[in-house]
Amino acid sequence: MGQQDKLAELYRQIGEQMKARFNGWRAAILTGNPELGKRMGLRAEKTHVFYNGPLECRLLRFRIEPRFFVDRDAADQRARTRVLERMAESAAEGFINRLRKNLRHLGRWVERESVRCYRLYDADLPEYAVAVDRYEQWLHVQEYAPPASIDPVKARERLEQVLTVLPALLELPPEQVFLKVRQRQRGTHQYQKRAEQGRFHEVHEGAARFWVNFTDYLDTGLFLDHRITRQKLGELAAGRHFLNLFGYTGTATVYAALGGAVSTTTVDLSATYLDWARRNLALNGIRGPHHALIRADCRQWLNQARECYDLIFLDPPTFSNSKRLPESFDVQRDHVGLLRETLRLLAPDGVLIFSTNHRAFRLDRNALTDLRIEDWSRRTLPPDFARQPKIHHCWRIARR
Image: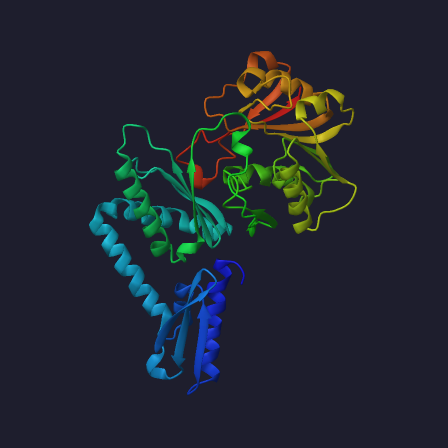
């Protein structure tokens, strides 16, 4: 019982206790997952097949004697080496070498900055069109939908190579690798559920802690390219009233609260994401009436709001055509009006951080000449996204 990635450690501990305390005994384990049985570091003397209803199980019978002990770490390393050798022979050597290069390149930065969640690979080689994000002991792999010109059989073979190489090279159990196919999204489709597993994992970013989900949605709940942007918001938030528009899972709000914001307000139309934001706040010990979560369309809410905020984070979707709203939203077409509505709530000496992930976006500076605008796109670009400088655009905006 429990989640697969936690059970591997449980089985290892069972094996260690058996070898340490029960030498000379016999033991048996009934398991629905023989691969987990291998984590015990004991070679089964006999194996029997049983069924628990429709579930095929194994009864593993052990003699707890040194001749049956297995050096699990050494065995795992030999198995990983064999896998990588086999993959190199099957034309995946280029992908393996690129991953090793990226690991060397990012390694010092990851260790120096204590970064636990980062992008390891992003279609560096066109024939291996995947993005690989590491979230502590988990990998989130997104396959970019191949163009029609690519042989689907060849694309499937390469994806299988990716899913074989990653756990072997990074020394992670295969069950801790999660795969999604990423296609161009329009409107609200990017926010819709894709599965119903409801499995969340806790990860760390600096002093903050977040819940991420690798299976149920297109994204995990934590945008890794906004890591520095969140840090900047935390640095600016001390003693300020903070507003997070299109708040998503509230990660920016967590940083602002941990940075000393007097109050925070998070606005989003999705009840699912607001609940996720509430859980993220609670995970960091942030509670109380000074941290408001408001379910509303941000554009309609802006028309009615009368409060004043010292620090505002505005990160709208690229495009939205929700059935609940009379008009569509296009960030390129509508950003000037949205900025003007947002600036109405900004304190005279306040700061607005405006961000968008629309890669072809162009800020209409001619319509905003009365504002002091600093381009923060480069300074908020993390090293793990340096190969994709247009992953997001970011500006610091204040009144002149």
